[in-house]
Amino acid sequence: MSGSQSRNMSGSAMVVGGGIAGMQSALDLANSGYYVYLLEKSSASGGIMSELDKTFPTNDCAM
Image 1 (cartoon, rainbow, N blue to C red):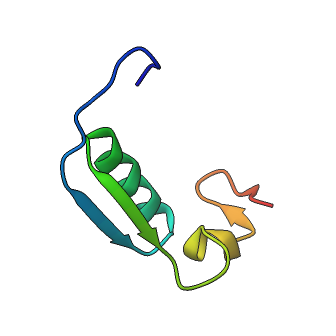
Image 2: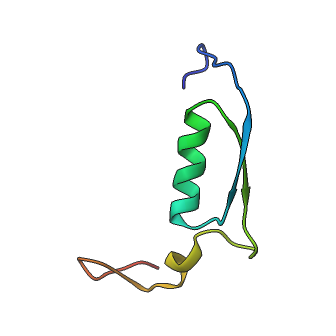
């Protein structure tokens, strides 16, 4: 959304879990016009993905 455009924000949603799916869900909801609260129990976001050192299918280093 550009600075000159504005949307009417209506409603709010809470997404529990700051992993890949939670972050994508929060972005999708925000882009749909909702205020979003993203809740994560740990001090860092990223979920299980942040613990992986190789990514599928290329086996590239994720660090």
